[in-house]
Image: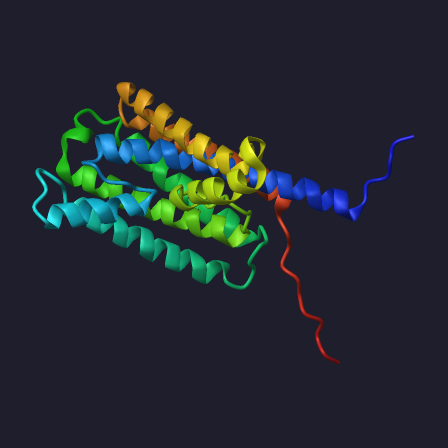
Length: 239
């Protein structure tokens, strides 16, 4: 006779689904960052630490380092994360309509950019490249805000340095070699694989990795909305 599922079982399943969806979004970050750095004039569209370092070196006179692209991407990411945070602020740690809407909007933006790069010579236009890096950074800002709102430990989808620090200074110290086989290592490996895939797919043009990133985001939206969606709770009306 099958064991009856308990509320704790359901909660554990939901946590696992949330973890796997954020892993997919971490892979997406690797994909689009490869596109940003290799095809959009060395702009990090997901990991903003890279842009700040590039800007510092560029301002100091570093050879051929861009200023405008990283600066605008940094601003776009920040503004989009702020706007997303305003939508998400009343329902932290829940997959509500705002999460579905924000991720869908990001997927639409990235897909539109992918289609744009199907136009011959689009990648040769500085205006197109700047627009693409700016809008992709905005989409990643929304994604990062969603990941932070869902609050799955060690799954921010964009930050690797702090995850690597936690892996080395906590997991390895406390558990030895066996201790590193956890989601922290998974996040690092996944973003690496995303960047690897993005760089490889650039052989076919920026459209391919961008469209793949959009498709994977849609997959996350569908899974998350079906498995994790929590309707808004209505306060009882006082008599």
